[in-house]
Image 1: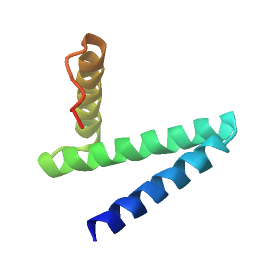
Image 2: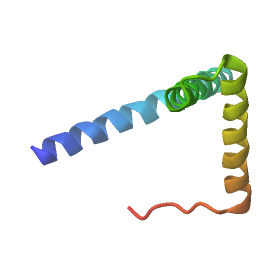
Image 3: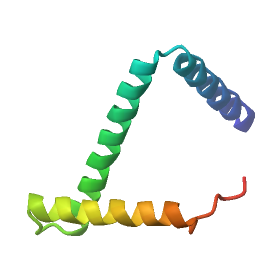
Length: 84
């Protein structure tokens, strides 16, 4: 069963890579924007769940603070990749 799951996951990944390689630069940019906007939406949903009384301006402010912190972590090499 575990072998079947790994084989399926590998096949899905290979298919995603094949499709990504076939995209034009414009399609890659559009896809990147869609993924980023989706991630922002999930982050906002998380903030709303954590702070249910916040209005939209406060949610946006908290989101910007979190994005700023993530950039600082990336800029300063604070995070480390996990060993596989």
